[in-house]
Length: 74
Image (tube, rainbow, N blue to C red):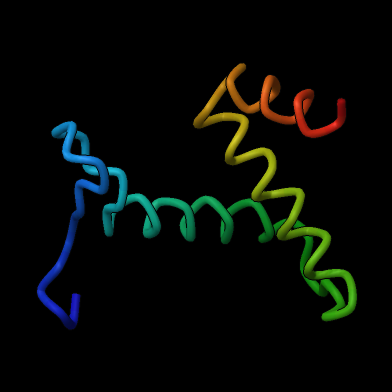
């Protein structure tokens, strides 16, 4: 917001890959997802964040993420 940029089309296809609303929505989901887990230790927080990131990406990318994971493992 400070630079006056709210969305960016990285590859010129007309779809804004980088958008302020995307990260704000992600933070909102993260807060609501962590709320039931009150008292998470700082030591375990990276694991909770990694799990949330994985679930969030699977939801957004669907089967293409699974294909990418299989390619990395093979």
